[in-house]
Length: 307
Image (cartoon, rainbow, N blue to C red):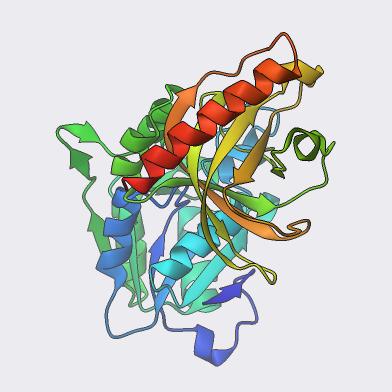
């Protein structure tokens, strides 16, 4: 998959794509239906925005994203996307009228042949344009437009909002049913306090800054090592929280990979939340903590072996 970070000065081979357009936070089943409608004889592309427009307009609001840009790109690549147009959402882009956005960005800039959006799509300055407006402006410029219906499951709309609610409740399997894949946290392994190593449970530490926090606690997880000499898939157990035993207060994700030995610092991991095991606890001492970690690991092994 080729990634492009602006709509100007694109090489000839990056123009003419059939694209799906939106924020694609989570790349859930509704998003996938939009993407599928963009598949055809032209190269398959995605137009998305970074940062998320909501972050641009309300930078101090609570974190809400289901995935960072890296995780989104990885997921889109798995779906066969050939061109990812990750447009910088800044004052210039935010200030374009709907007509100017279609003219400057879609027609002259990207030169797309077909665009697909969800029925609830809004665009242009002040979100003043809707999907029907997009179709009208695109038709005037020879761009074919498809408006995809919203997707529901058993009467419940599949949306990023409902997925966040499931994760907040500690229901990762319900979130996965709406996503069409496991909810994953992806990023670089950072240096931590190395306490897990002393306890016999060395962990890979990852930041969750900027992401919607699933329910704090311990999870059975699937782990994909994406980079470095240890690339591969593993089972594990992960703690999402603030480590009250050690007086921490900044959430992070600590993952113990079963039957693995190796240095993962600086490598990129993808952690899939499978089942919520228990809330975060504060223990009377290290022996009690280790006993609980043994029990968590045994339970996680059993759950993951049944997948």
